[in-house]
Length: 220
Image 1 (cartoon, rainbow, N blue to C red):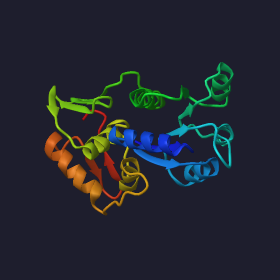
Image 2: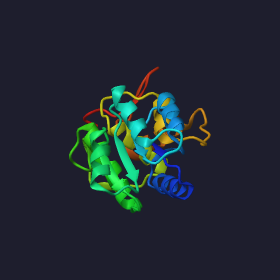
Image 3: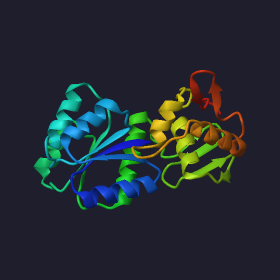
């Protein structure tokens, strides 16, 4: 899953980006409100992590403009403003959750997973597609009850596909979910990971729709 982090504090930004990348997320990081709007206009994201006290354009203004455009992108505010009035204002402006700094990275990752579940209409934290089970919190994958060892990229790819069973994702869409800025992506990267996953899970779990992309069937 690809996230946009908007945080002007360098120490916090680096820490959050590093921690979430280690947790399997692709994270792009910008440090002001104008840069956030440009990134949102030019890149597809699964979630926005938004500070409020930003240079060039305040976080609350970025959020308000986003919702006025009709965007349903999940937004999690990360702010040192801990007054009830600030939380109410942020949530009423269209944020889906509000986390006060300083926060624990494990809690942040858990809140992100919860919002992504809500966005996809799921209640169960474990993805279940046929006999394939995927736990985003522990990165454990099992097939017919047997644990399957996957690399971080393999997990990210099967998770992206299994989160939307029956939906075909193009190679470009999958690359966008696996990689953030600053990562060089080779032309056959997705194909390499798909081939590896098919060896571990079986050929029936990831189907190639010729000329379109890849999908996990609803009853894999």
